Length: 326
Image (cartoon, rainbow, N blue to C red):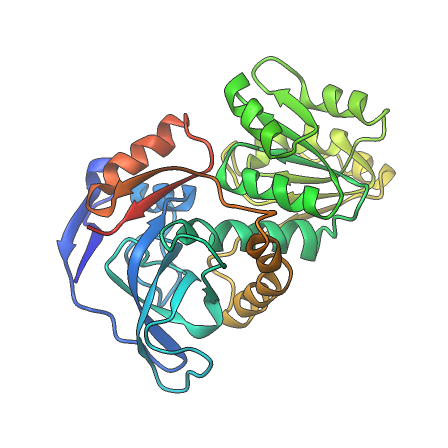
C-alpha cells in the first residue's frame, strides 16, 4: 500500500507518499481500506517533530479516517467485511489501509457521504469527552469556544446548541465569525479587535462563561479564569499559545472553578472505546437526524498532503480539510 511518510521532521515538503508494508490487524482490530482522512493540528506537530505517536501506534500521521472494513482480526464481533465506517486513530490515517481497534469504529451516519464521515471521529470525540463528559455543560449554560471556526469549534457550536446551551466564540475574521453565527453561535468575538473577557462578561450580564473550551493554553490561561463564571469549568485541549503560564489560584478559588486538561491520542484503548461508545449513543442520533453536520472546507488528494498542511498553517479555512485517497 501507499502512505504518507515523514523521513525527517520539517515543513510540508517532509510529507512523502511512499510504498510501505500493509498493516495486519491484530487481536480485536479490523483492517480498514481508507477512502478519506482528515487533517488535524496534531498532524502538523508530528510532521514538525514535536508530537510523536504513542508506543505501538502507526508511524504515519492521521488521527481519523473513513472507509470500508477489508478484514477482521481475531476476536472481533459486531462488524463485517464491507461495512462502511469511520474511525478514531492513534495514527495511520494518511494511508490506503489502517488497522483499527474495533472499539474505535463508528458506523457512517445515515445519508452521509463516506468521505465526509472522515471529518467526524476526532472532533466529536474531543468535544463530547471534554465539554460534556468532563465539564458537564448543561442546558441554559454559556459555552465559550476559542477557535470557533475550526473543526472542533464548528462541532462544539452545534452540539452545545443541540443541548440548549448558549455559545460564545472567538475567531480572527468577520468571515469566520459569520460562519460561526450560521451554525448557531450567539456571541461573536473577533480576538484581533476585541477582548473576549469583556465581551463575554457584557453578554452574560457579568456572569461569565460556565464552560470554556480552550485550544490556546498558556497565552489565554489567566484571561480564561477571568472569563469563567462562578462554578465554571475550563477545558484545555491545546497549547497553540504556549505550554507554561501563570495561574491565579486565588481567582480560581473565589470562583470555585475547575480546570481540566486532556489529550485524546495517548489515552488507553479502554478510555477511547468508552468515549466512542458515548459519542455513538449521544451524538450519532443528532447527526443521523441532520441536526449536526461536519463542516468540510475542502478535499485534497492524499498524495498531496503537503498542500493540505499548508492550508492549515495559513489558517484561512473553516472546519475540516479532508485527504482523499487517489
